[in-house]
Image (cartoon, rainbow, N blue to C red; front, side, top):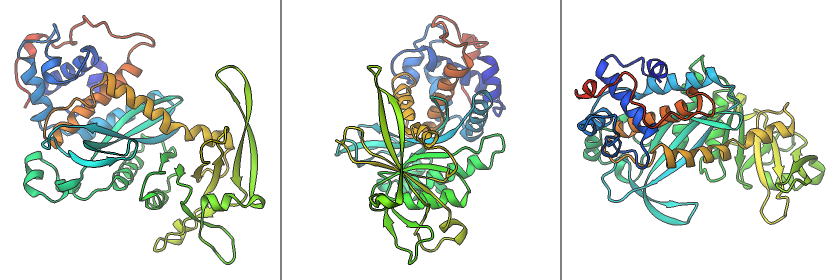
Length: 391
């Protein structure tokens, strides 16, 4: 753990910050239940005054979470074989209206209006594993306009008016600017995204490859068609003469093998969005359609720039958002991503950064199949060393 801490938190200049970072990380891994400073301080290896110090480290200590997350992403990339980036949405129900970013919104999954925080989690995907290395808090309601509320929560001015699409494109640009991170495709579920075309255009401007599931009504422009006609992907794939069928084999849970048809558009399509450069608007996408094997659900559609990849390879990449949801469930149940009780924007990002570090440490830094013993003390952080308050 000390080696991991020294690498990930190298940017920390003050010794007490490093000591509280390792205490917080240790407690997130070893303490069961809610991951709040008060509860984590009940661990036998921490001093009785640890609750105040843990709280200060997250809510008051002015450390920058950005370099920590960058090092975490590089650490993951160096120890795995990433093949995709993906994003998952996290809805955190809240009582009251004082938690940073809390607002009322319609939950598409349940159709109910909830009082919540809305976050985006950015994952590096390797094999069947997803590693959370970035976070965004999507503000809503009066958080974009109420200056006094923003001041109390210490929200930077740069966060005003940012949509989920802005957060995704901003993170993609930041990741692309880091040469230590791999240039792998962005695999996204855009079926409920109002700005799906804008996200695709933004990623195209960054020259990023994509595998994006889109709504059946998503509009595309068939390449080489005269006159050019904007068409929904579902309508285009209904033209039997314009599609090719591939048969993939899938093993069912009971051991049987069944054939799954997958259709691809015989040509390529581009974006019909006006006002973007020709180099973006004419970028070729391939359409994949996967009918429901049982015929009970509508077909699903993907757009991908990976026009030279085999169909099974693209569909394997397309599973990344589902894998991210599995990781999200673990983050909720074991790593406290819904437990932050503070009211500040920096505090929220600090807590989520520590949750990511704890998850990555458990998955990659521990010996395979081994869980750190609950009784062990925080390394090189005896109770006396934790008596100071992080500055």
